[in-house]
Image 1 (cartoon, rainbow, N blue to C red):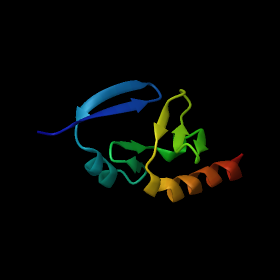
Image 2: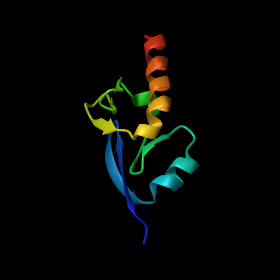
Image 3: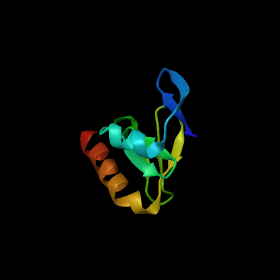
Image 4: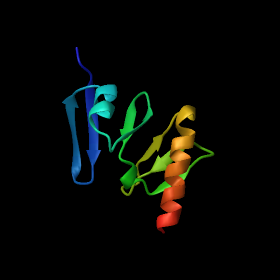
Amino acid sequence: MQHKVHLVAANGDSEFKNNISKLDEENDFLLKVSQSCVINPDNVVSVDLAKRYVTFPNGDIVYFSRDKKKQIAALGEEQDQSR
């Protein structure tokens, strides 16, 4: 039985059958930040490395695993340079 994936987008949200690992493999623009979550790094508004979470434009917060800290830190640096 496949798992359901909850997708949150700028214009709404939906659910469909898939799994996180397959979704991550099939979409190069997504970044897997934990066992249960992939994000679009282009939509990240802020990064808190101490508390290990990222914030999105709609106010949603997603926590990331410790082993993804370096990737998320690089993402935060890219955001600082673009501002």
